[in-house]
Image (tube, rainbow over all chains, first blue to last red; front, side, top):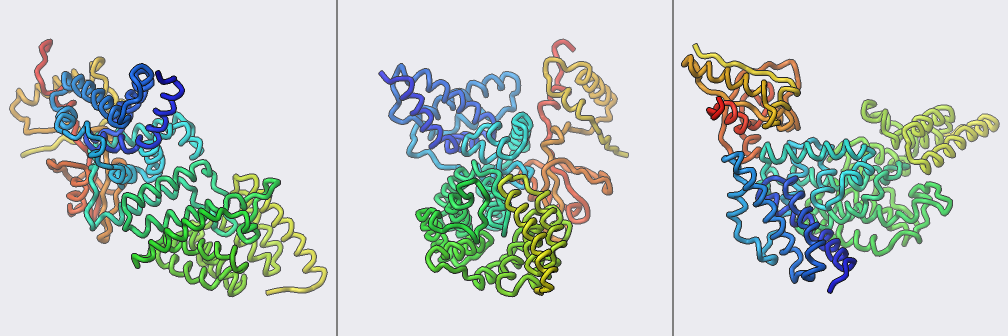
Length: 424
Length: 128
């Protein structure tokens, strides 16, 4: 006789390992992800009552799939009475591969492509993926995105309604549109990770709690598409950033910028895995945004061995990235890298070229600008730029860091004025 | 002459369709109107559309395809026509929409039909 606790753990373990797989499989057949999730949820509940009595089945996934299938069939039959045109039952009855767990095709790639479909509002790509592939609830997703749980729940329901009623295809698109579709999937995964990690003095990720989930999704995607270098590039990028997490805060909780981090706190196994992924990716000779961003982090990681940062290499990667994307985060990071080689004045010219519509609300832009102006001895302008950065910062530790920088810029102005020295 | 009646509905009206138990007077009015146009011998065809949230807008300016979630919201262009296509998925519909000439100089919204609503309007009821 199994204890309830053992069964609870078994259900939880199956849920974690197989949730997305089962949702993907069911919704690819019914094209109704919300229905698939409901049926699977009911099946998990049924497992909690049945398994303590009968024991945990040899194939827990197979058991859950059968239970979910039965639930879907019941519902489809119920709907058939009302609507003769309902195709769900037909689709379910046609599939013959239900029972054999080993033959169960992994359709999580299809599911991820649906979550990041261009017909779905791009703001919902990440929440959909977190819910449908990982089984996160709306409250947890809402917390990470600073949206009320109820609002997030409604948005998820609306998106799933669209997937079902507009009949979005659960197919892998052809070679002509796969790269674009895949980019949307990668962007959605990276958005879960929080995308302002190492942009110069960028704010800390507000979604740190989702970093593990994002890495898990990227690992899964690299298993599903082992030959796609950008998938490995994204994974390498996130692993590099994650490796530095222990060094990003001082023991007093203060924000530590990358340049001041103690490399001995970086997590070596994650860096090693990142390097392996990046090497594998570059063997395909198809460079892309995420590989370049990972390569920049790889150069930073090298500091733990050499004690130095090869800024020339970083500048070269940023220049290529800028041609590829032109995103404001890239332009700001590029300016900060150029400052290390050519000095603050040259970097400021690069910053000035950025469209102000993009830069005005972007915190790292103002933080870098403040830093450059301070280096040039333009204290009052530096203070003004830091003030903009502070106003745009929600993270307390980063705010504290910027306040300190601003105070230093204000002080250095006094020093500069009193000694009459001006650096240019 | 043949004429198209282009029917615009409020979110409130769209939500009235959802409830199959409390459907009067919305559905009743549609049934009676449908019956009168059929009886008059003037009815050529028509279909209700699914809720606006199921819409997707495709534009193809300068050869670059833009796909947006939701109904067409711009006010500069005006409704110029409609076509009904039988296709297996939204993805196939978006491909065809992108090839439509209006996608280059305007926009094309793709919205599924609402066959269930159509059936409720057009089928003779026992109590009718």
